[in-house]
Length: 139
Image (cartoon, rainbow, N blue to C red; front, side):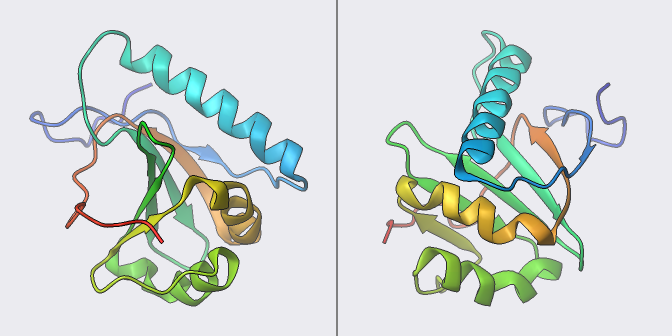
């Protein structure tokens, strides 16, 4: 179940799942609830930071998604995923960050997933991710 390719000093990621198209806001909310429950189950009582979801994009690259305790969203795009930045700008009505980590208000999460829906190839839960330049303010 755990990814054997992870380095021993980091928490393992969980199994990757092919993306199933989410058509409505209700679908997205149900998917987010399921991901949250599975992530909490995987974490148990182990303290960690940077847990969330990794979305593998159909045209290359990965997008790491994390919500903080205030409900704000951090998005970390790999270099190969920079092509999706105009889509992120359009669906969230936000300006791109100077770095690779986007800080967004939580209320854009549903439209973000709906906007990316056809561009996602797969998803997996991530137990730990180091967000580069994570000290970002949300729009």
